[in-house]
Amino acid sequence: MLAALRGQTGLKTFDPVSWRYARGIISSDDTLFARWNAPLLERVILDPVMEEDAGTYCCVVQDASFRRVKRVYWGIRVLPSSVLNLDYESSLAQWDSGNQKQNQTESDQRTPLIYTVLISLSLAGIGAGLMLLGLWWTLRRREFMC
Image: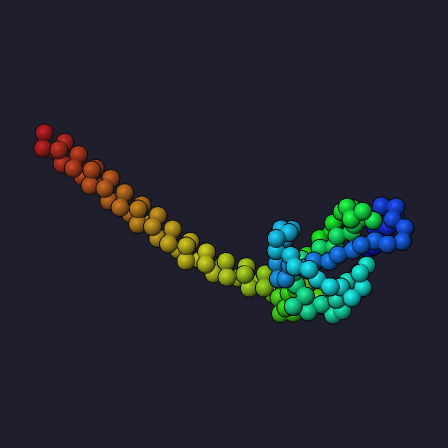
């Protein structure tokens, strides 16, 4: 990374590089960063990446007169293996089985709704039919009485 910065800035021999670190958060707010001593100034090697390495790393490169030339932020978030499975085949199979269960659950949830709607419409139809029958019966009795 520093070699690329040297090529961009035209710096020759000495590049003051400082690293800062905001533990556990991904942010570019400078007030949250603390100075971090990197063993190698031009790069950070986290092998393997652990949960305590999560956070934001900031690299500041200055020229000989200590003017900031470049500032770069890297955010690292570490997920437990139970959250993310990098074995593609088993992840795909697990995802597909989850979708099938979800589809079955959705159809199981729709079934009582359909029955509820059908029963409600049937009762409404019967009620409307009885009301019309009552009106017809009343009109018929009035015709015969007159």
